[in-house]
Amino acid sequence: MPASTYLANKLLEHQVGKTAFTMPTVYVGLSSTTPTLAGANITEPSTGGYARVTTSGASWGSAAAGSITNAAVLTFPAATADYLAGANLTYGIVYDAVTAGNVLGYGVLTVPKNVLNGDTASIAIGQLTITIS
Image (cartoon, rainbow, N blue to C red; front, side):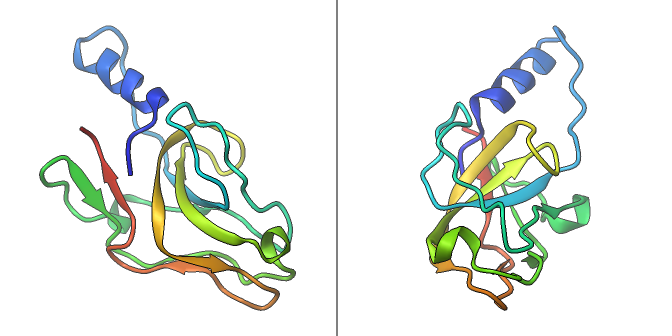
């Protein structure tokens, strides 16, 4: 998962002392379309009880070689209706807010999944990797 342009700019400004940057709480969402580094072209579910998953430091392993991976299962709420009319969800998106907010990065899901009424979507341990390069 590449870091977004937004996050790269914040980290660069922080690194050279131009602006302080405190990492916000990180939320993980899903998309059926391929995002851009600018945080565009995201089709996130908006029905069926969908909500982004809140993470904490304990949700992630230790960084190594410029990457970090989820160390906990990231479980979304049980669907009360089909997400995106049953379209395959193909990307995990990392945000800085529970709704709206800035995209921090994204990654392709190992197995695309259509989430139907009654399903509970989740991202298994080690299946979401954030990389800064």
